[in-house]
Image (cartoon, rainbow, N blue to C red; front, side):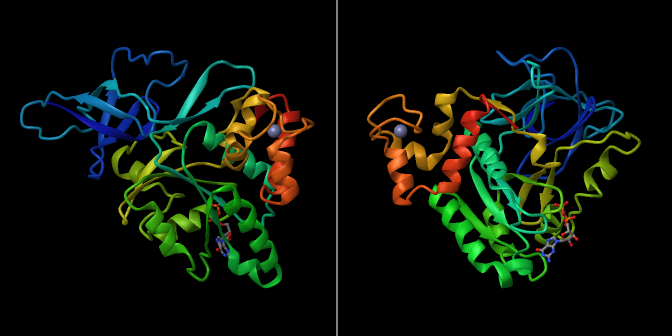
Length: 317
Ligand code: GDP
Ligand code: ZN
């Protein structure tokens, strides 16, 4: 027997596969060598990968189980993926998730206080990996009263840059339906610094899901005391959510200085009109980006993040 499925969990050498959009995870293992062309990844198979599997039923079995798991034969080409390098200098990379339809970056303006340059690095990383992004501005119930102007400013900056911003509050339920709709039918990466309310949001979208408990692992990989940082959940919507342990977990990308502006969509849009090419958008006369910053159509905050990244020698976390 053989088929195609998506990796929904990876725990050491054991995997769970499901034929999405159907949600019936079954165990699988890797046997033999699987090598992707040109890939220096330490893990050949990652959550989100579409794979071909094979299975030999023993006697009267109908489905793969832990005693007789399916065998992963082949990994299909990835549409996109996120990697983490083991060290700054290391060439080896660990693929943490692949084939992501959309990343939802969860932030809060206060409690904990947001750092915009940090958010901008995450957005650049998603652009580099060609993953569409939506920003989720959570905990608005806590600060709308005293900081409604800050909310307006935040939305002006990021909607102006071309990103969708969904305001949410787990406390009042505001925006949760909109977020659930935005996730519908997609493989989503939910990412957020610890404390912004990521777990609360996942639970609010689907009360059956508790990322801190990890339902799948209990049901299917019992006895395997391995933890998996990235795994997929099946939300009631239906959508498939890859929980991620935090923004710091991904996003070290190597960029040449002249590449950075390509990943600020609002800068890319106007940079064709710069007099010089390439243009670093710093000191050149006739720079369309600087003109847009002066005119206020590109926000000073985003431009400052760009300058900060230029100074950092192309390595960003
Ligand atoms: P995580 O670390 O990102 O998973 O954050 P948690 O979901 O554990 O939430 C951190 C804290 O923020 C908890 O005390 C939550 O109750 C609280 N919290 C989460 N979302 C909201 C919200 O929208 N409004 C308010 N007032 N508190 C929230
Ligand atoms: Zn320029």
